[in-house]
Image (tube, rainbow, N blue to C red; front, side, top):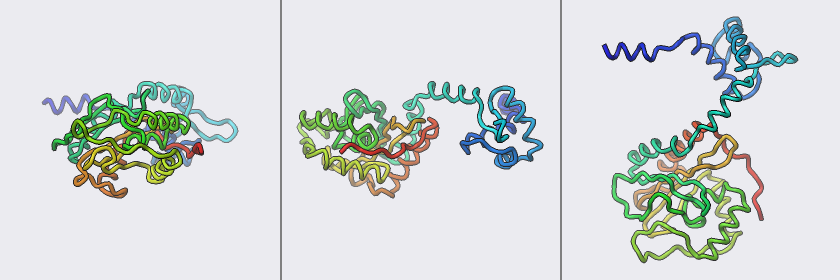
Length: 280
C-alpha cells in the first residue's frame, strides 16, 4: 500500500514534462532556434511544439525574435537561473560526492577553497584505511608544494597567485599536513618563472599531482570545479600512500577525480575558463 501511495506522490503532470523537453533543448543548445529545429531536438512534431511555446512565451520562459522567428529563453528563465546560482553552495553539493569517492578509491578525499591565506581545506572524507597525515578542516595548503595549491595557482588570477607565491617564499612555509611532528618541510620554491612552468603543466592536463612533495610516501592528485563564470571555486583532492595512489594522468584515480569534479561543475551550471594570458 505504501509503495502505491509513493507512486501517487511522485506522479507528475505529463504535459508539463513533455513541454519541458523544449526548455531543456534550448538550454542544451545555448542559442535561439527555429521551430522545426527546436521541435526535432525535443523529439516532437512542430505542430505539437507550437502550443507549448505559446504558453511558455506568455509566462516569460521563452521569447520569439520578431525578425528571425527563432525561439530563445525568456526573461523569467534568466531570473530563475540567476536565483538558482545564488542559492547554489558548491561545498554542499560536493560533500556527498566526495564521501562516495573516498569509499570507492580507498583514499582520503578533500575539498579545498581559495581563502584569505590561500588554498584551504573545508571538508575531508577520511580513507577507509588509516593515513597518518595531520590534516583537519581549515588546514591551509602550500601554494607551491601541494596538488591543491598548484591547481588554484594555475587557475586563479596571475597577480593574486604571484603575491601569495612571494609571501610563501619569504615565510618559507605555510601550515602543511605532516606525518608526525618534526617531519622536514618540502624545499622552498626557487623562482616565479620555474613555478609558472609547473602551472602551465597543470593547465595542460587540467589537473595537478604531487608525489612526496610535502611528506615522504604521500601523494596527491587534484581536479578543479568551475562556476558559471568559468572561475575555479573548488579543488577536489585525493590523498594517499604513494604505493596506493596511481598518479598517472590517465589512471583510474585521475579519471575518477575528473568525473567527480565535472559532475559538481555541471550541478553549478559551470564551465571551464577561457584561456587567459598569464603574467610574465
